[in-house]
Image (cartoon, rainbow, N blue to C red; front, top):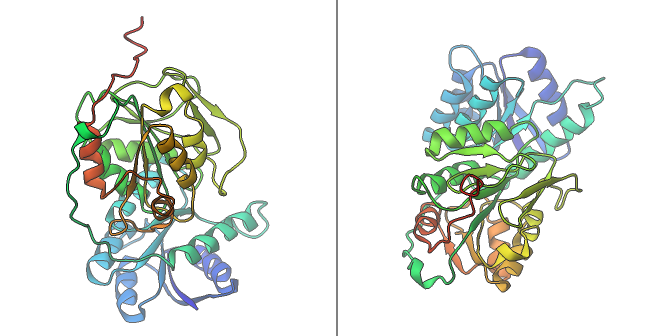
Length: 347
């Protein structure tokens, strides 16, 4: 039985979450907290498996509560966000930075057409997070020599899921200004958080990040996050497309689609990276890229919140290198590169 502590200052939201989680087989709500101070105290007293956390509360907000809980009694925390405005989305990613695992949309109430789907998403997320390790260990790794890693690179493609935002931050923070390659990212997120992720990554890493737009040429020195509900296709040249294609591995966008939809002319010149996440999304396609000449990298077990995706890549022998996040960024920064064709330079 997975035990859950529900934290929210709204009595109606608390009641909704308790009803949804309490009715779900295998879940048990063992407490409710009205604000961050109560959340910290009850986390110590009850030791729940998972905490669902509101962010905007009196006395102590959710961000500070997460920080204190992760310092004193590390617990799996799911941020339940309304996500209705920019401030809410920004706060959600600050919560991830403080130690929360994942964001999920606040379920709609009974009678709303989206009630069942949003309630199911909450239950599914809480169940999945109950299996996640809380404490992270950062492994020591030897730095590989970039000059020994083969051909020049023209594109970086990265796939990530649970635990990915902070890992992406650490990787991008290692890239220098004027890094000569575009970086394209698929990060599994709840719908509506893509722009917030791009904005947060830009500020937290110091590297320019934007949401990928249909038809916008990819440019060197920038990172692009694929928007939710679309599947990407990259190349030829600096072109990109956003397709209305079905989910893969239950995800849209999916890492598998990203890796598979890199134009043949770019595959051998791609550095492809698979990061922390549940399941197998992107692992088989990473192996295909390796076979086609790409440099392929997986995150190491010790630094992964969930070792599903990178672990499957390692099992398939899809990854040439297995590294912790900061070493991935340092390696990318030192790769032999062929500057990506810039739309500005072609004018």
